[in-house]
Image 1 (cartoon, protein in one colour):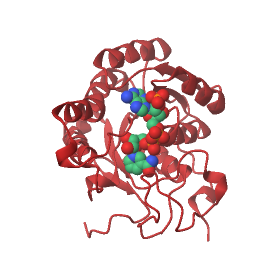
Image 2 (cartoon, rainbow, N blue to C red):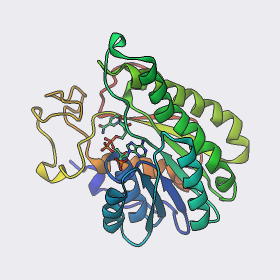
Image 3 (cartoon, helix red, strand yellow):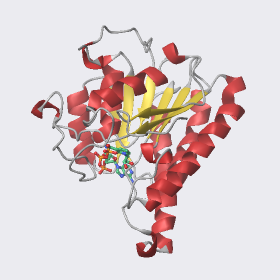
Length: 264
Ligand SMILES: NC(=O)c1ccc[n+]([C@@H]2O[C@H](COP(=O)([O-])OP(=O)(O)OC[C@H]3O[C@@H](n4cnc5c(N)ncnc54)[C@H](OP(=O)(O)O)[C@@H]3O)[C@@H](O)[C@H]2O)c1
């Protein structure tokens, strides 16, 4: 059976495009940056650790640059954009991603935990969007893609904070779709399910049922009964960010191998 990774390349029309990919020194953000570069875009990536960013850029190649920023901090997002503006006069896309909130049940979670999740997950999305819009307005094909989780469709056990606060990002995305559509700025969101950790792709092209998911479950409970590969996340994200997806706007795309079992 032919998998997406073997498929014939489609020209995603990224020539002369610059895309900001946040929280991308590793993991899902890195997987998106990698495919964007392969498809001809220039990328600017960020995360908190300069060491990790240096390694990522060394592996991504000449068309990538990095900026150190903690997305939980408003001032660091402002500073991120001061540096982005030094690097590029326009942005053609932004992949909005951040680290995950900690696990925990309702009774274990303090007000401070709620506040820090709102900063990390919701306010980072708000501030990144606010800062990026003037640069996106200079592009002929601007697009924002928010990365959330399959938990916005079906809550993940023991992840109350993520299950709750990520929905606010979806609400913002759906509202922005209406507010920004007339300007031609596309906004969409992706909902990853269990994706294999970076660097473990070589272990097996099709993971067995007893491989662990990133959240420690022993058997992926999605319909495909395996974890997704990093590229299986990066490729659909690159497509949604690209001019080829020019009429796709305001959607929530599950990339979860059939984890979500609902009808709608
Ligand atoms: N992997 C999955 O299967 C899956 C499924 C559903 C949802 N998600 C969600 O998707 C997001 C990414 O997951 P992942 O698996 O790629 O995680 P990961 O492998 O741990 O990577 C996280 C990335 O985010 C950066 N980061 C973390 N906190 C940050 C902050 N405050 N400011 C800036 N950068 C930050 C990290 O770099 P530094 O440490 O250098 O900052 C790293 O580059 C998380 O929110 C996760 O909950 C993941």
